[in-house]
Image (cartoon, rainbow, N blue to C red; front, side, top):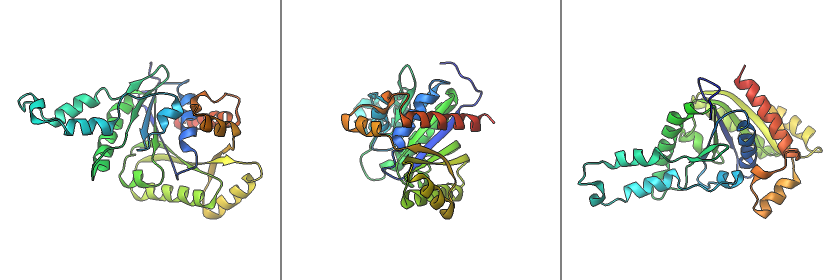
Length: 261
């Protein structure tokens, strides 16, 4: 893949659980993969992004770490190689490559305190690899934990998804406030409302204004996404002419314009 820019752009996707952020994240990755090289990062321990993208990953960061930590001393070639060195070598090939994008998955580490360690490793991977791609898209876990653990940093655009509910809007506002409080380097924070019906949209915009949230874009409720979900089909295959696909393409254009201004 050729690189269009001297510096790769990083886009993080966040929001409370159930707002459909991973589905729209997959559609954004599909759009961006057509204009440049993309590294997709699943930073959610539930690891739903690979399915949404229609791919199977060989291994994940948490699994690699557990494998290396469980190595007996005799596996370390007379202790001449430290576990940290082995871990670094294992992680050098952690990305799964496809024709459209590469993907790195956090996975579910085991044991107390492992999430912090795996988040630290994942952040290092993002820091070292993101410059090799035109776009790095990080699907963060639901809620605010990724912020408090600083999985995300030096992000050009943070896309915070909400559904057309007061709770969703309030969570979106807290995510933006927390990002500012932690002094994470976000270039732009965009709030995007998902699953919006025509009837709910004017009420949503009014309530968002009352709460102090600016809605940058809306994604309409799409029956086809529900059908794909229940059928187990990847969102990557969602028809281009579907309502969600068209809205995601428009969101992608807005992101591209912001990044290149």
